[in-house]
Length: 255
Ligand SMILES: *Cc1c(COP(=O)(O)O)cnc(C)c1O
Image (tube, rainbow, N blue to C red; front, side, top):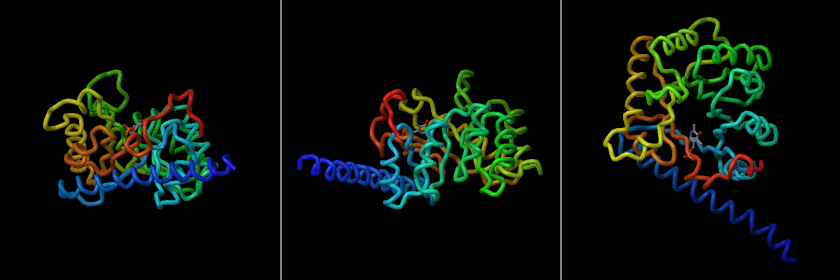
């Protein structure tokens, strides 16, 4: 008896909690976008280290795009969850993992392209293993902090080379969608009016849009700084904690 009540009520509690926080964030995003005079700011829920049942709850609520950070976790979730989910890979990308990622048919986005080499690898692997699937949309990750230990393209030469690859005929299975940055904790928690890293990403968009006649999207803003990001022109915010709650450690997480 108790067992039955437990089984029935626990998932309902989680469902209510998750939908409530998702809706609250969605309304905030809408409000901040309206205040910034911007239309169509996308909310990407980041489900890393959270169970597939959480993703399923939001899927049943109508959400179709989710962000993941770890290749194995994304592959596993993609294999057990509905096939029309559009997965975004937003984690640190390793060259030797490009192949595994490219094999996921409903991988929609890779947001963390931080070298020409990885863009080339991803394209090759998609062409080889999923030639008929969608082209993978890619964001170039820009190191906007100027700190050398942070990932992301940092020199103009690297950035231009990567863009030129995407615009060349060789890029048959990947396409350039935009730019992304992970703001550093210090800056997102400072009192400054403007986040300098977001401003840096906006600056690069200006340069590249003008030089190559593009309309790049900007993926910037997380739970702690998405209001500011939207204010400064973000097209997509990536929200984990504010929707799903605090994450377990990587060793404790269960899919
Ligand atoms: C984890 C993660 C997020 C979500 O972060 P929260 O602070 O939990 O909203 C967004 N972007 C990237 C790249 C991440 O790794």
